[in-house]
Length: 308
Length: 308
Image 1: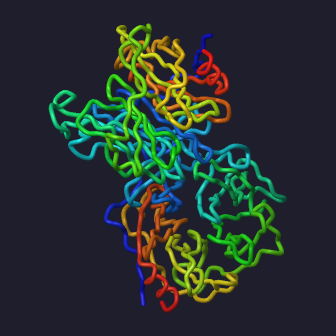
Image 2: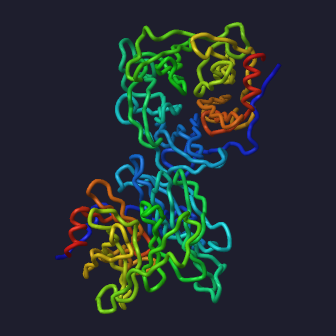
């Protein structure tokens, strides 16, 4: 049994704007949430200074986008001076939360800087309007940790997040999103060294999708070839530290020219998979340069996760 | 007793964009509503084809604006093929309503076309998200009628609007915003032929402001000199067909170069006066070309309306 996401006929759905100083080079790795009858996109953009900022766009159909001219989230201190990256937005109890990666000149942990003399932080922010964001803080400090995403509801009255403490994907819990204790963190899965496409590295995509059969999670991975591919994994509904099933084959990989060539070649990277009706919308960055859309039926994806 | 609105130090707050096809010539006559911690602006814009469209911008401080690249309301048939103009947005019972003027090649009333072989319609539209708008229909057809604005709450369980059936400002009531009966319409005030600044024409600005002393309404007018000036009028809280008071002097008039020169000279035209705390924000079109901001204290404006 194989399964493939289908690219939308109109693609890419968002391109860099050559007339913009902050988004003339790359727009990629978007988050999309469907709220109040509109698709709201938060996307990563790079322009003349190579600093990543989060831009915002609206759509009525999920395909044609209307962008704000200026970004909605930008660096504000040494912890994110090199950029804010890879937003993942969820709505929990009528409040919006964004997880994103802060990349800064400053390194705030103990030990040595992790990224070219600086560091990264897996951040959480909060908003009531999707435009202005209050930074709550990082899940952990002083390590190479990203691809963190919140579950779209509390489980046992606690916030739950997936994050990556390489090479494992971990699960963490918090009462208030401010305090994340080591005792509440547990590794749940990792690369499969004997598997052809996810042997080297794996990380989470968008917010887990709640289904009667478990939390349906899409993830990304690569092997020695460094080609990014997407796969699925099913976690237990009540105890998402338990992996129920993990099909062997990927569901999506680079094929179009704008996925094979760009800022970083051979990348399809997704942080979002909103579900509207029975349709799953997988928005993704193509080669860290443009934004694409692929879709599938939710029921079919669930079947693949369970039996594929 | 005199009273003057104070221009903000940063002005104009929005300019046409010379790189845009649809808003390169003029941006003017905005509506601004404060909702969910943000200022939301709907503004009239004209570009290469001279057709008016409604653009949308966001702000955290009411002064610096972040625009969507594409308009949110555009012509859709012969009734508004020449443009959609002069939005006035209110929130009533958790739903947004926009009144605007449709200007079309088509004339839909009986009798002769009113505007250069076409006609105008005083329209009402509805939205849950401030971006997508459902057209409900016009208040009247087949006449020169504009400057219509809804009261920000129902009165005696009915929607209430001011509109202008020249030369009078009228009040109209409706159960559903779809049906507006002639029996529910009444003229309430008119130009003062013996007054120096509002002798020829008068019309409503933004939504009436509810105060303990009555509905505080800002209006615009001109005399034979055709210079647009702003004034105030106080209407009875329970029966807004009754004028409580109407000070003689204007509170604002063109003085800056960008109010004296532009698409139409000597115009300050406002359709909006949101109140945040004790501050009234009067956004206005300057010479039908740019957008300005002037403010005042609400308590002082009430005093002027009562005793000025």
